[in-house]
Image (tube, rainbow, N blue to C red; front, side, top):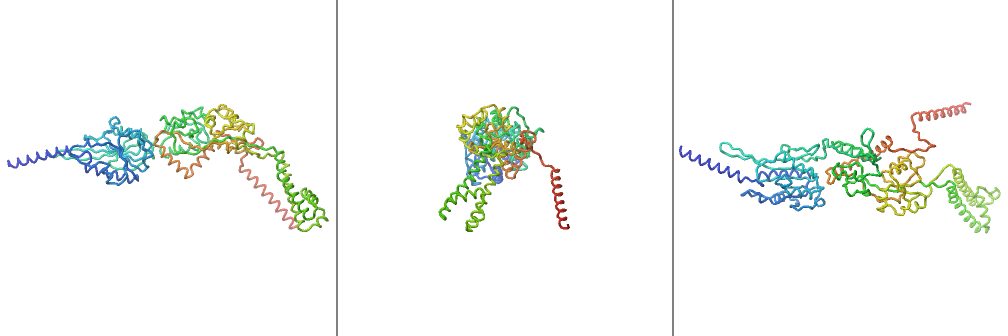
Length: 605
C-alpha cells in the first residue's frame, strides 16, 4: 500500500508538471486549432465575396511568439492554401492603394491592440485603403496575454472602422479557458468572430453562432437620418408645400434613402437659388456636416474642386438663350417671290428663247410665249392648233406650273399682314453681334463662363451684369429684349414656360455653348454611400424610373407655381372637357341625320 501511495503521488506530481508546462507552451500565435478556424473562415469569405487577390497588412510578430512554439506565418499559410496573388504591406504610410488593388480583393490585418495609439497599422490603413471601404477586411487580433476583448474594446475598434468608412469588416480573436478537475488542468480554445453595423447607431454583431455571412450593411440603414439642405430649384430639386421633396434628382435621392430603410430630413435654405448656389452650402458635405447634398454641381461652379462629388448623375452644359428672329412679312414675301417665281421665270425665258431660236430662228417668239405662259394667258385657239403635239404638251405644262407658283405667291401675299415666319437665326458670335441684343447675366455667371473663357470673349462688349433678382424677373416673363445664359437644366424650365405659346419666344444658340460637364451630388470624401448610391441610380435608369421622376418633377413644379406657363393674350389656353366632345358628337350626328333625310327625299321624290 505504501508503495502504491508513492506511485500515485509521483503520477500526480508529473501530471501537475505537465499541466503547468501545457499552460506555458500552449500556442498563442498559430497552432492547429486557430489555423484551422482561420482557414475555414478565409475560405468562406473568399467564396462568398468572389475574391481574386489577397492583401496582408501587418508587422513581423515573431518576437511575440511564446518560446518553443513553431507555427507557419499567415503569409505562408495563405499562399500554400489558396494559391492567389498576395500583396504584403508593412508600416509605410502616405501611400494609397486605391488604384492598385482591384474590386475583388480581400484584406488581412494582424493587430495586437484595438487602440490607435498602441497599434501603428491603423494609420497605415487609413492612408492606404482610402476609398476602398467596400473590400472585405479580416482583422486578426493577437496578443501575448490570454484575455478576450471586452465589449468596450470592441466598440472602440468598430468606431474607428466607421470613422474611416470601412463597412465590410470582420474581427476575430482567440482565447483559452482553463478548468481544473480532480487535479487535472484542461484547456479549451475559443475562437470569437464579430462584425458591426453603424445604423442607426453602432451595434456589435456576434457571429459565433451564425458563422460568417456576407451582408452589405449599406442595404439596411435602419432609420439612419440624412440631413439635406434644400432650396427651390426646379426641375432638379425643390420642396412641396406638404414638406416632401420633388424634382428629378430630389426624387432619386428620396427613393434611395427610402429603399435602403433610412430617413430624409429636409432643411430649407432661404435666399438661395440656382444663380447664387453658395460655396459654403456646396461644401457642407466636405466639412462632414451632411452625408450628401441634393443640389448637383458641375466643375464650372466656383469652389467645385474643394468638394468631393458622387459618381456622375448626368451631363450638362451652358448655352446662350436667344430670342427667335422673326423676318418681316413684306421682306419674306419679296424673298419668296424672287426665289420661286423669279427663278422659274428666268429659266423658262432662257430655255424658251433658245428653243425657238434653234427650231424656228425666231427667238422673239419664245420670249412672247414665255410671258404669255408665265402670266397664265394661254394661246388663242388658232395659234394653239398650229403647234405640234409636243409643243402643245409643253405649253400646257408651263401654264399649270405657272398656276401653281402664282397660287403660292397669292397665298404669301394674303399672309403679309397676318403671320410671321422665322428668318435667319443667331447661331454664332458674329450673328449675335449683328443684332442689338445684350447678354444679361450675374457676376457669378460672368466668372464661370467668360473669365474662364468657356464662352467666346467676343461677346464681352455686349455683357450686361445685373443682380440675380433682376435676372430672375426678366427670365420669368421671358423678356425677348435680352439674351441670357442658361444651363441644360434651366432650358427645361424655359421649354415648360413657352410650351403653350403659339410661337416659342426663345431658342438655344447651338454654337454658343460650353463643353459638356458632369453633374454630381456633393458628398463626403471617402463616403461609404457613394458606390451604393451609384448602383441604385444605375438600376433606376435601367428600369425607367428616371424618366418618370423627370416628368413628375416637371408636373409638380407647374402645379405649385414654381414654373409659370405663359400663353398668348389673344389665344388663351383652354383645356378640352367632356362637354366639348359631346357637342362635337351632337353636331356630327345632326349633320348625318340631315344628309340622310335629304338622300331619302331625292330617292323617293
